Structures are given as C-alpha cells and as structure tokens.
Image 1 (spheres, rainbow, N blue to C red):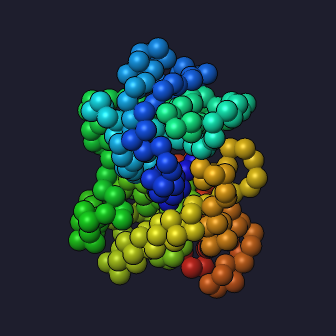
Image 2: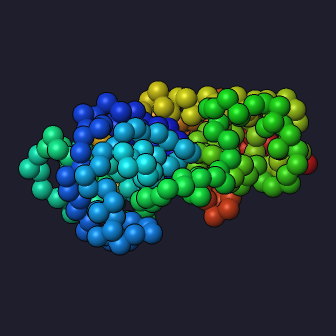
Length: 278
C-alpha cells in the first residue's frame, strides 16, 4: 500500500503535469464503486466543465482542489496508481476512472485490486479531520510526541500504524523507523525511555524524508506495485534496512533479521538491535 513518501511523490509529479487548470472535458468510469457518495453520472456532472486548480496531500490521501469549490480526495489503498497518457491512448485492463482534459492529456486511475476510492465533497474535514499530525509537519513536535506516547499502552508498531496517532506511516516505514531507533516492534509504548523516544521521533522523519528523496518504495515487479505517474519505479527499496529482509544479516550488528506479526501485519526487526524492554 502506498505510504506517505509514495503519495508525496505522486503529488509532486502531478504538480509538474501540464493539466492543472485545464478543463475536464470528459470522464470514463468503468468501475462505479471507485466513486463514493455519487453515482457515476452524478460524479461526471459535478466535474466535467471544471478544472483541477491545485494538488495536495494529507497523510496517504491525494487532495485535489476543484474550480467549482469542491474537493476531490483519492485514497489509493493497496494497488491504486495514477498514470498520465497522451491524447488517443486507449484504456488499459485495470483502468477504473479516466479524466480527459481540454489539452488532450488523460489521467488514468488504474487499480488491480479495486480497493481505491474517490471522494467528492464540500467538507474535506469529514474525511480528513480524524487524522493525526503530519510527521513532517510543524505540528509534529518531540514534546507532543513524548506526551502522546506516555498516555498510551499499546505495542509501538500498532500505535504508529494508527492514522489518528500519526498520519501517513504504514508497514514499510514503521519497520524502518523502529529499526533505526533500536525499538522492538512489540514494545509497549509507555515503557519506551526518553532517549529512545527522541531517537524514534527523528527516525520517523529520517525514513520518510529518505523515501521521498528516493521517489518512493517499489517492491517486486507485479502490476500492483507502486509506480510513479510515468511508470518509473521508486528507488527506495535499495535503502531498506529490515523490511522484507528476514533471514538476512542486520546491516548494523550482523544478526539475522526476524519476521513476526503485529496487528496482522508482517513485521521485520533485528532481535539484537531491537531488544524489548520489560
């Protein structure tokens, strides 16, 4: 599932694409359930004749400001991706929604597993309002992070995956941040000492910034794997320290990386570098 760095990479690609402020002249919807709250006909009627004025991100959501005052929000879920096409290009097998612009460009929403959703709303906070702070934003401070950790008694990985606690982290970058900070993924959050809290706070920022710099993480070669709008792969897989490296040597101490489950999620850690505090 695309996480904050992958979504941020897509937003940066969108901002460079030449269809901002271009009129949407048609929309093709081949999977009606990709749109929430509107029928396919209503959705098209609301958007055709308008333009996308700006692109933004909140956590793992892509946020589009529409010229009619509405906000279009997209969550890619597991396999959703946006692909830029030229005029005359035909639909591909897993294209669910296609936007056609006045300059001939097409924006295809492709989703192998059909889990992604578009939300068109007058009140974006109804969808985004329950999200926690942005880990690369000004409101994510070490002081508040320490307070929030001490108030909760949960396994730290489960807590970091909770989008109401911190917005944008997923399985990959949580494993990476916990390894960098030397914290066991099943460690109870309220028992993490102050020094480790500071290390985790900085590690979260580090792994996300690295992921953005490397244009996201692409794992494997399947159709559902993350790709940029031009279908280039993200380069961050070469920088991963523990994720999907079970059985391999830890880059820091040489011990074998182990794999376990936390909240039904595959979790990778070094048993020597990330010892659990009791």
